[in-house]
Amino acid sequence: MAHFAKISNDNKVLTVLVFNDSDMLDKDGNSSELVGQQYLEKHNNWPADMWIQTSYNTVSNKHVNGGTPLRGNFASIGYEWDKDNQIFWPRKKYSSWVKHIPTATWKSPIGDAPALTEEQIAQNKEYPQTWTYSWNEINQIWDLINFKIS
Image 1 (cartoon, rainbow, N blue to C red):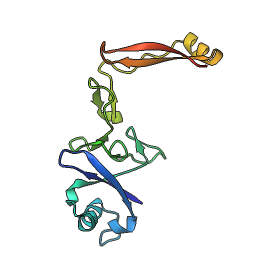
Image 2: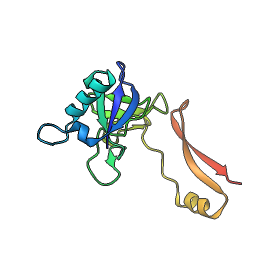
Image 3: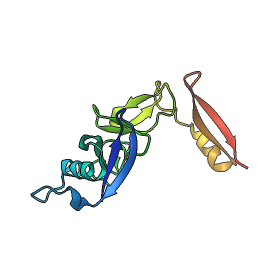
Image 4: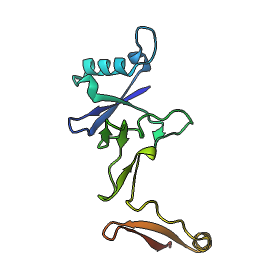
């Protein structure tokens, strides 16, 4: 099955359609995104170049089955299409976060959260609590949080 995202004029994903692979075969029997786009334009009254193929097996620029990733992430409604980088971007969690092209993910402006200490990891296993880091948008830092689990 082939998946295509319908893109708005402001590069937002409006919907994702699935259809048979046979509808995107060229005259030589090869799968062709262009043929799929033309099919979608004909049957959905939306310009061919505003249908972009996407793969439900692609997450964070990795193929879940070890294959070749396609366009960073599987498109979903509200995602942004980045034509220059050929990536579908999920909604940004925080206004300060920036695009990380290699992983097709949003990252904090200071990088990933620090790793938990061995003691915190051990406590997470031993006691009904959990340590984690949470992004503090106001102060632009990672806050260490201890949640008690009851």
